[in-house]
Length: 67
Image 1 (spheres, rainbow, N blue to C red):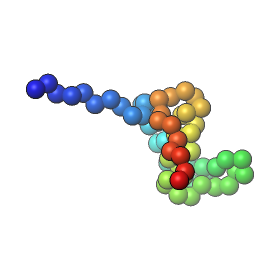
Image 2 (image 1 turned 90 degrees about the horizontal axis):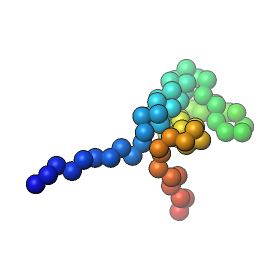
Image 3 (image 1 turned 120 degrees about the horizontal axis):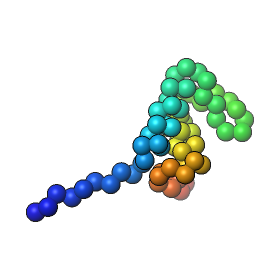
Image 4 (image 1 turned 135 degrees about the vertical axis):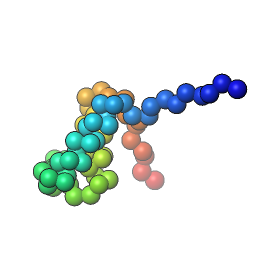
């Protein structure tokens, strides 16, 4: 039986953007959205990084729809 190859969900560029956002969060310089308030949570930092990657055209899955 042949081994199935795994495809990346996120591109390397997207992972870098999310990593940079995490570093900015730790430094206390990560700002979110139009308001420009400081982002404090980990989840928020990752979301900001991935949305920036999406804007640049990196391979990132679509946003989840709210239920």
